Amino acid sequence: MPQINYEVSNRIAYITLNRPEKRNAFNRGLVSELKEAFSNAEKDDLVKVIILQSAGKVFCAGADLAYLQSLQQYTFEENIEDSTYLKDLYLQIYTHPKVVIAAVQGHAIAGGCGLITVCDFVFSVPEAMFGYSEVKIGFVPAIVMTFLIRKIGEARAKELLLSGDLIEANKAKEFGFVNKLVPENELLSSTTEFALRLCETNSGQAMTTTKQMIATVQSMELAEALTYGATTNAKARAFEDCKQGIAAFLNKEKLKW
Image (cartoon, rainbow, N blue to C red; front, side, top):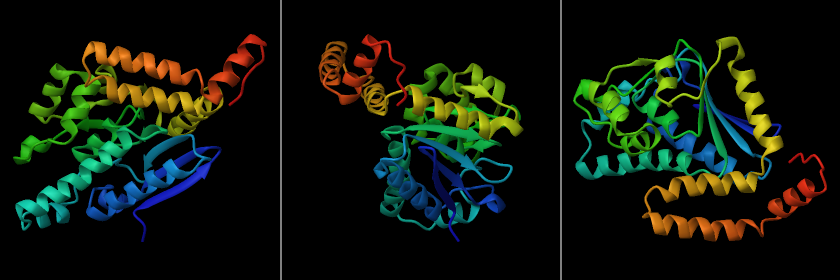
């Protein structure tokens, strides 16, 4: 039985974690199916925005217990391969050319919290709890750390990663980790409405390039980043979307992408 559901409607790809009986916990199969779903969305020209969501009451509880137990028997080389496999999923989402919105209907813990860390937007119910509990079991939140520091800064990342404590959704919003709090009965409609607005009002080509730049410039020196920006600016002027957008602006036409 598939652990991920994938469907497309109105230029939005809905990727749904579907292990509610296991609190949508990670195992190798779930990670593999997620990677495949995000690859499908990338290749599909009809998809402009992705919504990542979960079935059941918990968004994702982190690693599956049986999966954690099996890791105890791995060699170092096997653990390197397995860690890299998960790292590749996080990087795939973070650098995905389509905008990714997480719709969080319940707790997101450890690896599950890592999953939404790499999304572009996070809509959450007020009751959800977030946290990286790895240090409490002697583990290290090693892969997500780079993404989290980029997202909320070192001081707040230290508070979450070193304490291992869970925080409420309103504090996660204060940290800049969650973008919007939405009642449970409005979560899907609100997230979909936002996704549709992005589809209709923004150029997909421009959003892809902007997202790529955000991921890239942070590791550059100032002069290098500005040169990269100037080059991208020049290239963007030749985009078909840019030509169409400027023409509509000059002709005072309402543009619907």
